[in-house]
Amino acid sequence: MLDLLLAALAGAAAGFINAVVGSGTLLSFPVLLALGLPPVSANITNNLGLVPGSFAGAWGYRRELRGQRRRVAVLVPASVVGGVTGALLLLVLPESVFAAVVPALIGLALVLVLLQPRLQGWVRRSRGRAAAARGTTTVHHDHLAAAVPVTALTGVYGGYFGAAQGVLLIGALGAVVDDDVQRINALKNVLAGVVNLVAAVVFVVVAPQEVVWPLVGAVAAGALLGGLVGGRVGRRLPPLVLRGVIVVVGVVAIVALVLP
Image (cartoon, rainbow, N blue to C red; front, side, top):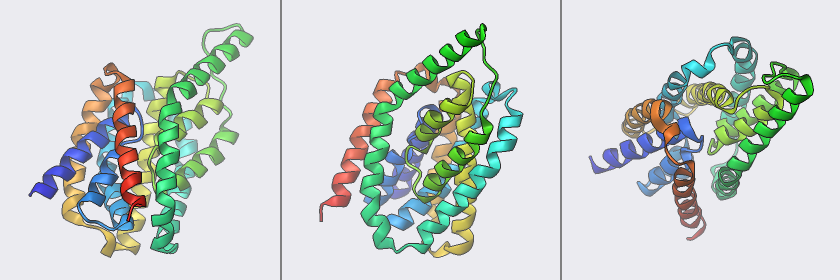
């Protein structure tokens, strides 16, 4: 019961942060490791558990999704392809590869979390310059041809591990999608949710033995609640505090993985 409670609390925190920042895996994944799961099993169990939270966060941002139907229709297939590819890579490559690579992936994710304010600032400035060049305050010119491969590559990363997938998406999509950062964040929630969902399907079909279902249920329950709260009120909280918590947890996870 204590394990389930800890998993649920980790899922709630991850679902909340995924909706707001996009790096909740850095909280829930280390908790599952601490509960004794092997790295690949922890990653798969975490992925399945966070699916409801991803879509809860997208629902919370539904107002910002209005008018983005074309973007969703074009980019969701890219997320599907990327997510399936990443999930298959996780299952095909030896577990030793994942155990060796994951500290570096967590480190990369932490760097991205720290750089997120700069990425968002760069996106805002680039949107403003584009608007000024067009003589308007709003720009509606997307480079979807560039957004498709960017989304697919991010999906590969998300299907394989997923930490800070949302941060990657915000930074990458901001360069090719002309819109407000909050609306890009809403689009990010949908695409990250799709990646998590298709990867989860692959894991359940191909490697059901790696799934710890009681912990999936606990993480899912927490992530659903956290995603709903994050989508509604999370934007009012100081992002610096959230990033600080993520960085501390991520560093602890790296130390735990690297030390014998």
